[in-house]
Image 1 (spheres, rainbow, N blue to C red):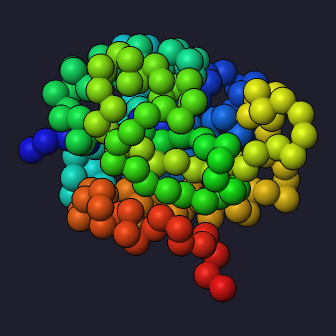
Image 2 (image 1 turned 90 degrees about the vertical axis):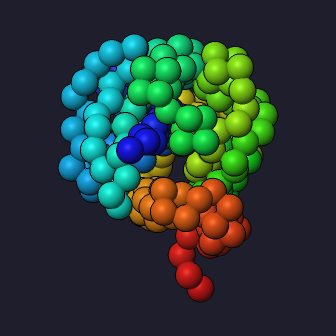
Length: 193
């Protein structure tokens, strides 16, 4: 049975754990807890674990390379586990989406995201699925500083809801495919009106 590789992006180290830039790690931590997948293996400059989500075999991974070199971990994992690129799902932060908004894309450019840029360069392909989680853009100041700051306390309920939405998106991706996930979730409000 083919595996899926689900890679959440972030920076390794406790000092970065709560950062906006680390929402990919935070989401994969949530998914790991939800499905009882232990992220206890270390290889290819990544921490990862193997398990199942809705009966599909998955490898849940977090590159330990720092964001800008994520491809140095993701590409070897893709090769080692013989994951077809249409079974690679990358979860990461997006400045251009409002806080907590979750959007799915089947492929495309990096959108200026350095982690994604590294993965595209190492795979020599843009043909893999992305799950983007909005962190909002600062009204003033340097976006590079903003992404390396933690979420505010009052933003935590939105982030928790975004993690639940990522789970819904992943289950739809695994069961019905990327286009159904896009139809169901792109543009959907996080909290029903």
